[in-house]
Image 1: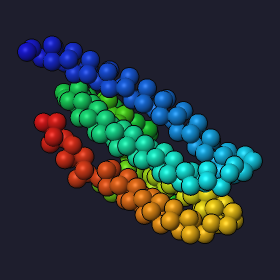
Image 2: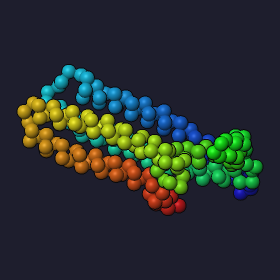
Image 3: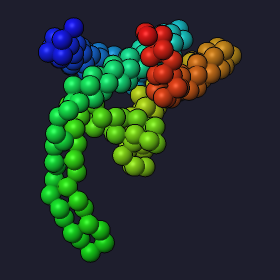
Image 4: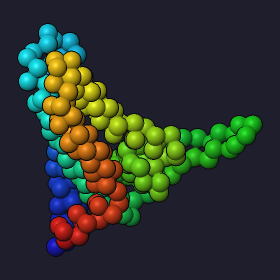
Length: 209
């Protein structure tokens, strides 16, 4: 394969991945917002349904969280692959100079040089808990907050559901529902952080090779 043919093949692969990523963010975000809105409406706003309904709500919330974790892991692997494509497409190209030299009382900021096709490298800096890639502690905190946010919403729906079950006079049922759901939610949070680690992504990379 000639270098031009290889370049065209890489560009085509990159374009396909960018289209998939746009579709992923559009579809997943809309679906998650709709599902969370419906869940919170049923749990917090709507007129209370029969108490038996509250048994199902925590497990529906868990299923929603599991879908979020799965899609986040898929998105992380896609971004990793796209960054590999970007690095390959940038070989031999001059770096781009970003920003200007700025001198303050405490520090001098020099212009930054970045390679072309650096979109995913930039995205990683704000969407990972990997210290080697993250743009400082604040970026890691934002990532952790974005991960825990849906989990806290789900936990809120679970708490309200358990309260409604107890309030309806069925405390034993609340314990029977609450214990497995809390364990499942803890496992879900652990899974989220595990699937976004470098080690987990590396295992995926080894499988497709």
